Structures are given as structure tokens and as C-alpha cells.
Image 1 (cartoon, rainbow, N blue to C red):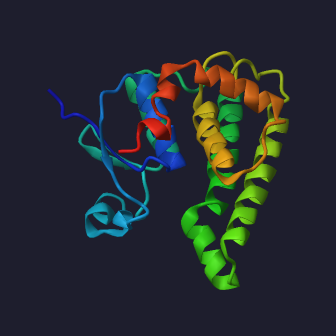
Image 2: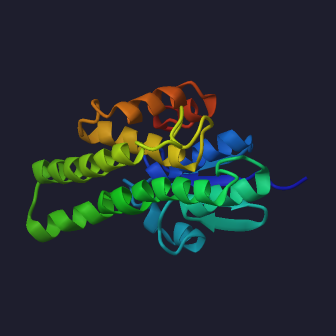
Image 3: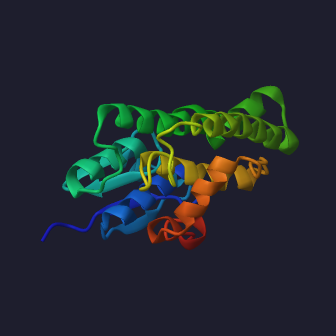
Length: 212
């Protein structure tokens, strides 16, 4: 019997949150190991041996250690039969573009290590940190709302079943609310959020249920 997959995780990490949703949707029975970012565990020799970038998540599965949330998600699509990408090339391109607009545009500039370094360089305090987060999250989410104004948008970001873009959107909504970015008026995003809230795989991946 193969070893149980292990997710090296931090409850508030949006990248880890994406992978938790994907594992749940795929029905993968995994064990979570907390890598506490606040305590600096991600910089420890043990974690750097798993991921030289010192980031979470890292997933031990099938005799490998996988890193990068979107790569992990696509691996689960290819090996566990979970349908998180459309069948057609145009649909896959759109779904990936939506996911990337969050994972590669909003997320990196709002990464806590990046923002902390900016604050050190500029002498900014807590108010500046919050203002930075709100600006870039709001800017990105407003653009995402406009991207959803598309015939392929359904109950979810692309069509009527959850996909890779939804796995990125829901953690970003959590971050928006955590930092006080007002996204209440983004009607398409809020409708998709309501649809995801009905799916157990999303609910069970929420940080409040994974704060060990």
C-alpha cells in the first residue's frame, strides 16, 4: 500500500489553501504537517530540504516532493482524475489565465515576506502595510471581476463545476477580508463564492478548520 501523502502546510497560506481544496476535491486522504511561517519554520534546514525556496505548500506524494501550488494542482488533475481544467484548449487557457491573475499577479506582491521587506526599506508601519495590501488586493480583485464578464462564466469561474480558478479565488477572498479590502460590491465574485460555500471540499479547506 502506498504511503499516505503528506502536505507541508500553513493554515493562512493562500497557496496551501488552494492545494487543500484540490486534495479534498480529488478525494486524497492526506496528512497535514504544519510549517509555522510566523515562527520561521519555513526557513529551517528541515523545510529547506523539502523546498529550497522555503515556501509552502510542499506535497509528498507518489515518492516525490512537489512544490508550487498550481503545479501540484495540475499533477492531481493528471494523476487523480479530478476535473479542474476544461476539456477544450480555449477553456483551459481561460481557466489558467484566471488562476494566474491571482496566483502570479495579486499573490506575489502581497506575500508577507515581500511586504515586510518593502516596509523595512521605506520605514512604513502597520498602517502602510494595511494600505499596501488593500491597494493591490482591491486592484487585482476588481480586474478579476471584469474578467468574469465572459460567456464562459457560470456558477463558477469557468462553467458550472469548480475549477482551478475557483481554487485560487476563494483563498484570495479570505485574504481580502483579512486585510479589510472591500470586495462586497463585486457581484460575480460574490456569487461564485456562494456557490463554492456549498461544496464541502471548499468548506473543509478553510483556514478556520485547519488552524492546528
